[in-house]
Image 1: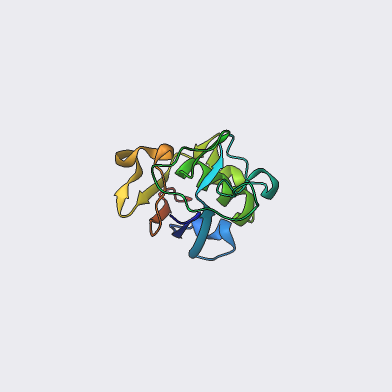
Image 2 (image 1 turned 60 degrees about the vertical axis):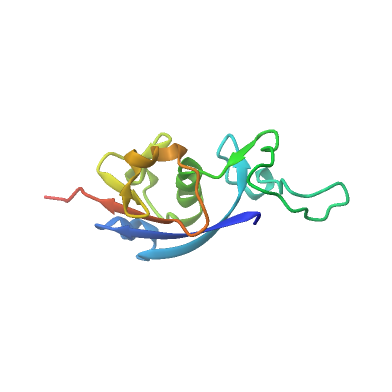
Length: 136
């Protein structure tokens, strides 16, 4: 099993303006991330290093290492805010989730049907963030 998850991220409805006017991103995130959702490099250990410091194979059935969880949408939101967002984080996130008025689709399905932030990301997932708010 891969130690990372590759995703496609798209922004629309003006939301791309907060992300350097870039509508689409290809991201690779670690398979396991801190429970705290911290995105600093030092806080994301490689959970599949064995005692000799070399990478060992893991399967979906392997136990989740202490202090870590499988990468989910909540972690992705923190990663987007901390690493790709260029301005005004308050227009993207409110506490631990997206602000009201931002539609989130996971593989063309409303994220509310997928478990919202608790959805565990899988390789090849496509997430779309669309602002439904318009200035007047």
